Image (cartoon, rainbow over all chains, first blue to last red; front, side, top):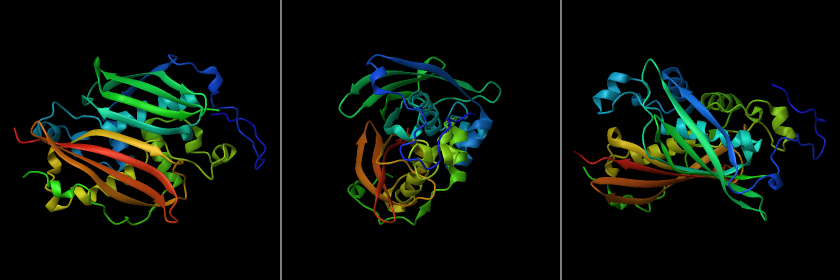
Length: 156
Length: 148
């Protein structure tokens, strides 16, 4: 991974990474992506997030509580979907607000795992504050898994 | 057992301090697939004006869910964890969570309501540094499914 050359400690040194507000318009589409999730990924997320609920990795347990199979953490879907925005903005620290509704679980079969399709559109842009609101769409097996998914980022 | 509506408006005392580490930030960023070097490379982070590596936007859930545990584990609240589904989640960042931060969370139970045989509880965790600087507001709605 390359980083922009910079003078350490120099005031005002900023890698030219953050998207400029002037190049963004309402209606712009962000580059879409596919997030593949399998059981190993869910175990990884369980450890990282400390959310070790067994419905996210233990298939017999998930079925015993009435689920069709293991399901992904809603917070995994939320956290991976927003990488579409942070990559487009150029700095994860510029996302100042982010909210979602969890409309449907992402079912993660043992063999195939699941693909979450993520896309995003600029819904509003405020020239005064250089804040843009991106609406994210995330689907799995053709159905929306997030609702009202809005991320607000401050651009340069 | 129904969820105890008397809990609406309750505010818990601040939690023990949670120390944000570079190692946990890296682990979380890898788990959600965030490739931004600002999570793992302190030089990149400093060049962008941060004190150290910063956490991805949803990292705060890790601390907020520990705060929520005070309510969920309270037998008087009447929340059956095996019937809990995450309904909504929202973060407002006053600034990014940064490695080295020592933060405390204050849990607020904003609403407790019943709808369609289910209970819905909205909690808000205010994360601030030990010195009192506001860092993040994390709001969560859980749905406790009613008996079939």
